Image 1 (cartoon, rainbow, N blue to C red):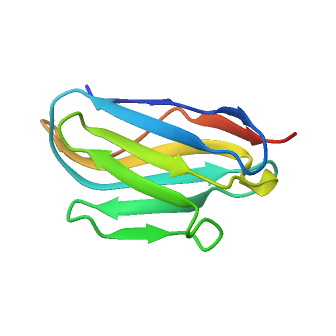
Image 2 (image 1 turned 45 degrees about the horizontal axis):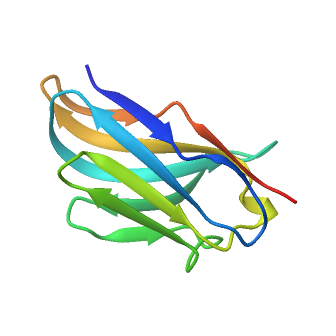
Image 3 (image 1 turned 90 degrees about the horizontal axis):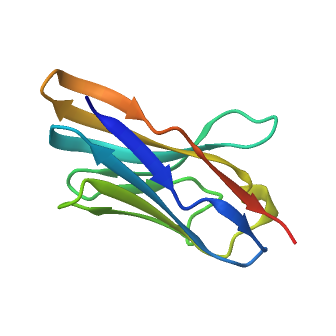
Length: 119
């Protein structure tokens, strides 16, 4: 059974940095795509960043130049480095992986981690 566990959220002041991690466990043959989404208070869930297995990345306009998605291939862990954080980055952040496992192709979500940017 595949499980995604997120960590790294918390409270940070504006201008600060956080690094989120998403560790995938279970029998995983391939990570096709990986992504981070977020949902702020009263807002719809939005794409923050994504990366294909080939390394192509895509970022939401509001985080370009500040956030970086990366991956540890050996550990099946995905990261989101967030710099120059702003109050509007406050949200629950979710990792999303498109995987090939023993049961075939599937989409998996983490449980979410809270990021709060405030003085």
